[in-house]
Each structure stands twice: as C-alpha cells, then as structure tokens.
Image 1: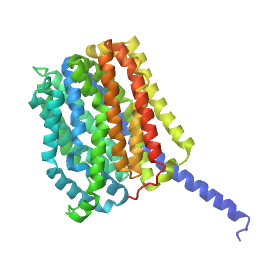
Image 2 (image 1 turned 180 degrees about the vertical axis):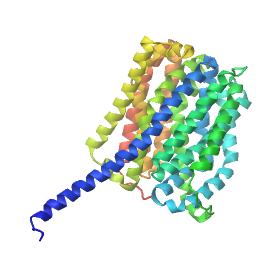
Image 3 (image 1 turned 45 degrees about the vertical axis):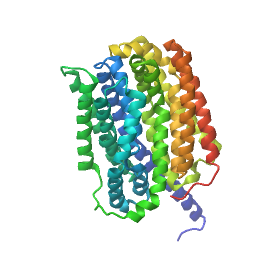
Image 4 (image 1 turned 90 degrees about the vertical axis):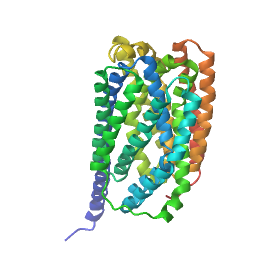
Length: 431
C-alpha cells in the first residue's frame, strides 16, 4: 500500500525527470545543429583559403562584394514567403506542401522585381568595376540556386530535423570548397571564370537538397492562405533586404569609395569575422524557434544580458584566437590573406557587436513584430551608411580605418539594442 508521504517525493522525482528529459532533448538538438555549423566552419575556411589565394586581392574584393549584394537581393525571391514556410514547418508541418506551392508560385512572380532591383544595384555600385555578365552570374547563383538550398535547410530546422539540416549544410559547403579547389587548377584565374565554377557548385547543392532532403508532400495551391500571409511576408522580405544591406553595406561602400584592392583587403577581414558568427547563428536559430512557441522567454533582464554577454564573449574570443595565430604565422591562410593578417586583431570587438545586431533582429522576427523589425533595420542601414561614409572619407590609413570599425559597430549595437528592446515591451503578435 502506498504511503501518503511517498506521493510528494514521487512527484518531485517526476518533475526532476521531466526537467532533465526536456533539457536532454534540447542539448541533443543543439549538438545536432552545431555539428552542421562545425562542418560548415571547416569547409568555409577551406573554401575561403582556396579562393582568396587564387583570385587577386582586387578580384576577390569584387567577388565578395557582388556575392554580398546577391545575398541581399536574394531576399526579394518569393517576396519573403520563405518566412511563412518556416513558421509552417515549425508550428503546422502538415501544410508544408501547400506553402511550398505558394513559395514556388510567388518565386516566379517575383523574378521581374528581382531582375530590376539587381540591375539598379549594379548601376549604383558595380558599373565601373565589375562586368555586368559577371555580376548577373553571381546574383543568379546566390538568389536562384543558393537561396532555395537555404529554404530546404530552413524547413528541416523548422521540423526539428537538425541532423538532416546539418548534413546538408556540410555537403553544400563542401561542394563550394571543391569548386574553389578545382578553380585553383583552371588555366585562367579571373572572377569571370570563377563565377561559372560558383554556379556549378551551387547548382549541384540545389539538386541534392531537393532530391534528398526536402520533405515529401503533395503540392496544393491555396491562394487564400497565401494572400492572408503575404503582407507579413513582404515585411519580412523588406526587413531581410534591409538587414543584409546594413550588414553588407560596408563592402559596397569600400568598393565604391576605396576601390577593388581596398575592398579585397576589407572583404578578407570581414570574411574572417563572418566565420565567428557560424556557431552563434545556430544558437539564435534554436532560440527563435522556442520564442515562437513562448514569446515571453526573454522577459527577465538577467536572461537577456546573460545571452548577449555570451554571444559577445564567444565571438570575441574566436577572433582573438585567429588574430594570435595570424600574428605568429601570417602565412597560415595563404599569401594573399597574409597582407590582411596584421589588421585582423584590430577589429577585435567587431564580431561580437555585429553578431549581437543580427541576434537582436532575430528576436523581433520570433515575436512576429515584422513591421517594426523592417523599420529598425532601415534606420540601422541609414546610420551605418552615414558612419562608414564618414570613416572611409576621413581616414586614409588602413590600420586606423579598421580600428575605427570597433566604434562604428559599437554605435550600431547601441542603436539596435535601444530599438529592439523598446519594441519588445509591446505584446508579441500571434503567428
């Protein structure tokens, strides 16, 4: 016969067991996801080393800047309907087939706008430095080949299939690295020749992604569902364009004001900064998913500040470690990278501050505050343009310019924190 005194004890053990089981699943999911980030980090580094030391510094600057523009422009595809597909995979996975059909339909409809926007960006930033055919090839690879691969990754992550997403991430990044290595053996090492290798690597990734990793559901068109979510998707698309504009606008300005060689050195430094963000993005992605289900997750100041401190610390330590390696072994990443190696440590605070601005933008997306997010990112893009234009025109010495980026990104972070946490005082929107 069960004693009454045993009941509270058993309930306590049950609660502990439930707590441990829930955290165990979270840890397993995180390590499944981070394995993809780790593999991506390794192959991204191999890809970067091969490409940065095969192209000249000036042509690497052209490619990196055109690629950044392509990533920004790719957010126009399907008018941002990818966000609706992600929310569906996270909350209502039985509708993936229906929303995939909507994505394909809106993707086709968005192509004229994508082409017009691409040509406008080319005329403003690239007409004097990059041939139109090369720019078009790179944007095609980013927007119509790589962006759909990201859709497959997004849907798998939304479904909680982090292991499958990790495997695809590693495969796709490895294919880019293979493309860069094959390019090393090409007879001509120009950005025009590389653009064809880049298209090939991304095309193979796309075939593998949809052939083996996309969930199998019948495609059903339901226009009433799409129209209901189209306004939110357009807000997301606008916010994504503005987000990547404020993230990558520095590369466009350096190319326009400083020329291809300075753009190449700057692109090398910022590419190394980008590598520190790969593990942080995995954490942000999982936090966003939890916030979709529990919008008040970050209601406590201690939790908010603890997460931000962790993001900054991890990012800063990663770049510090890289800076130490390049200080003692400047040729560790190749001869072209060696020219930028002494400058890497000068940007010590940039990765942490940059990653925090990205993280804060994701918080508003998780809470459904897409219009506010778009407005905030527009304000940050404008502020970044003003600050960087001043820095690039006022400072001629490259080391001083790189050092000043710490202040630029600090001001951007403070503005982002003010805008984000002010918006988060309002109630989250239903998804």
